[in-house]
Length: 278
Image (cartoon, rainbow, N blue to C red; front, side, top):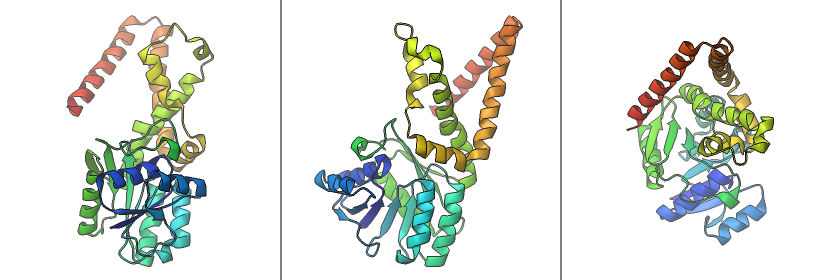
């Protein structure tokens, strides 16, 4: 099978490397930076330039959401009918709405996707074929998806080392990602901006490092992701602010009983999460 990977950043580059490591598929790659394509060929992450969409059995779009939509709008007519197109965007509602409509118009098969793996760095230089080992791959197929195409997609991603495939709707995906990923990045960014952070040496350990880890991010990409999922993220930020207010109120009022109850509730919730994950 010939697979075209469009966008050779952290995710696209890692997918290309994983395909080359785990399968016998041919990988053709494209990136707006020609130097990245050259480097990808030099390290055998791709076999060839993606000069044409003709001849590709599968296309993986590892681009920002607005670039993904723009690519499908501008070049969807070049995608051969029957080709399986999967995007890797961190938000799904608007991308899938456009992807499904253009797939119906041009005859290719489209499935929304989101690999749940990453690091704090971006770019091909930090890509690795091991990035997805044991990770979850979320797929958000349209209700009328051909079951054989969906089965093919599931088998493909499992062959790259993903540990599980989660089937979701774009709406559910964006609601959950606002909480599990985007809110965590907002909190880490806000936490590390505290003036006292610069004086942490000698006063910090694992909890500090855990809190600041995802404050290192690609600000342009995450700004786009936040705005694409604006309503869900606002709801979760406001909910977090309200919960933090409970701790502040208990301390201001010297209400030890309420604070103890709040902390106990947090411990209980964490225990439930650990039980669920086993």
